[in-house]
Image 1 (cartoon, rainbow, N blue to C red):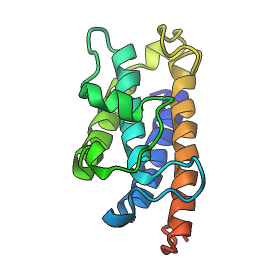
Image 2 (image 1 turned 30 degrees about the vertical axis):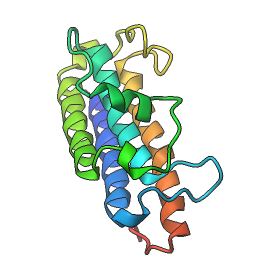
Image 3 (image 1 turned 90 degrees about the vertical axis):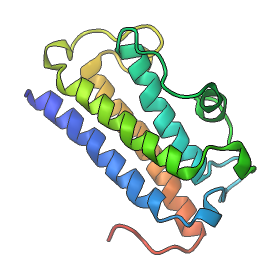
Image 4 (image 1 turned 180 degrees about the vertical axis):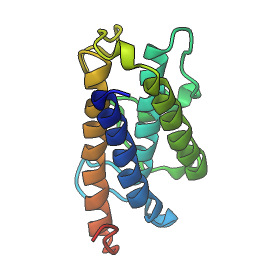
Length: 164
């Protein structure tokens, strides 16, 4: 495994561990809490991260397509906005399972990509990163933006720190 691939995969694993540690500690009754005007809530963040991994895979893997119900796209896609109705969202356990499933699938796909790291990305995601090698840290950075949002949510709820 090349150093570039190893570092990229480590970044994806690390960012997901951070996100899940923060998400899983937010009590159910606070998962729709929005700490600032026009902010995101934990349910939207979790669904959005799962949606993104699925979307990336649907562009990278020929013939794969999205594995998510159409309703997820309207709720969690880039440009969607969080709503306050819990009934409008999938159950957290379903979202949580999607987070695990699609990240594992993405890491599995990327683990076999050492010979393709410099290949340009397909239409639909090439604006996100120029190639597979750049995609991994870009996805990890995007996730860490949402980790910061989860930290603000937790602080506003006066939940104890998860790290340190």
